Amino acid sequence: MSTLKAVRGTRDLLPPETELWNFVEETARRVFAGYNFGEIRTPIFEDTQLFARGVGEETDIVSKEMYTWEDRARAQSEKAQSLTLRPENTAGVVRAYIEHKLGETGLLQKLYYIGPQFRRERPQKGRYRQFWQIGAEVIGPPSAGAESPLRDAEVLEMLATFLDELGITGWRLEINSVGSATDRPRYIAALREALAPVKHLMCEDNQRRAETNPLRVLDSKDPNDQEIIDKLPKIADYLDEVSKAHFAAVLAALDACGVEYEVNPRLVRGLDYYTRTTFEFTHGGLGAQNALLGGGRYDGLSEAIGGPKAPGIGFAMGEDRLILTLEAQAAKQTSFADAYLAPMGETLNPAALELARELRRGGLRVELGDGAFRLKKSFEMGNKLARKIVLFGEDELQSGILTVKDFASGEQVKVPRAELVAALKQN
Ligand code: AMP
Image 1 (cartoon, protein in one colour):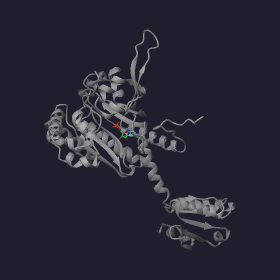
Image 2: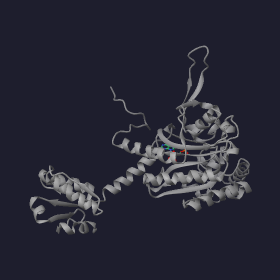
Image 3: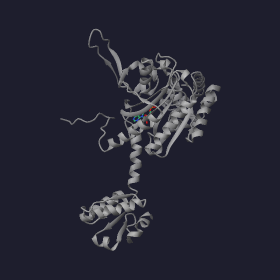
């Protein structure tokens, strides 16, 4: 019998990695609570229509990637229904907002979720068929200020704070405005016109997008098509005064609180429901799938799925990618421990702990070995964890002169204990 395995594009999360997942989720809960967000948990499957209408029939997600099935009726009173594993969570949150009449409170709803999403994509590093998203939405009636650019800026500032709290360094925020429901048709018409004479020169995917969803041509990565794409009309030239003012206000608020960003006029994102602000946080360490998170404003989404006017803004982070980034950073740091402390004999362990304390208080990053290990094993472990190894037996402890070996150069020196911190700090 062949052995059964996790389905392609899905995976098991095991300890100790799950500790990192818990750390990320706990940090999200703590940081979001500080902005007065509450948690929402929506079902993992929904009526297929929700995504068709809420995400858009022409998007890759809906046209190619959904796990959809006909759910048979089990009783006369039931109807067969087309159901879909959620490929994203914003449509579900907005459905819940409408269903529970949350808008009638007259208050902004600030909701976050953490959970798995499902898309039939081509699996690769950082791209799975079941993946986790941590996301949040700010949605409410216009009277609660749901349309204010302040909300966009607050969400972006919260994300910057969250990534900083996780200890993820080197992220980049790209931001754009895709205009309002009235700006977009004018821009799309201009795009179609500009694409008409050149689209036959583009790749097959872009030829199809030029017909069905020309905005999507802008985020194509096809290297041969970039020259054409760079010359296409820019959305910024098609924004009306209100959209322009909104975008300027978001950027001004980001400037005021020191969140750095880059305006990327080609950032339109794959989901149809975005209006005005769109954004993405990327990280260079992730390779091809470099988007840590994406989001934007969706002022027309509630109405598109049959609800009241309820402007909103939100984001979804790829939790799998946050973990990959943290793991890559940790690997780098581990190899940079300053010293591996190797006592030679188990009876020296208490003295080793004392010396480790001395070195750590001196500002060093120290991995404490174990006197029960043979010398060969101490060297092997030290080499994996630290730049240098500090060796000492009973004699060295008595004389106060310890042996330090540098793994990279192979150089070995004797160092008096009082000078050890300084010696280990040298490269
Ligand atoms: P989206 O819902 O497409 O805007 O995606 C938001 C974020 O979810 C992306 O920036 C990724 O970090 C993450 N994400 C989307 N699709 C996948 C996937 N197939 N595997 C892992 N992460 C994903």
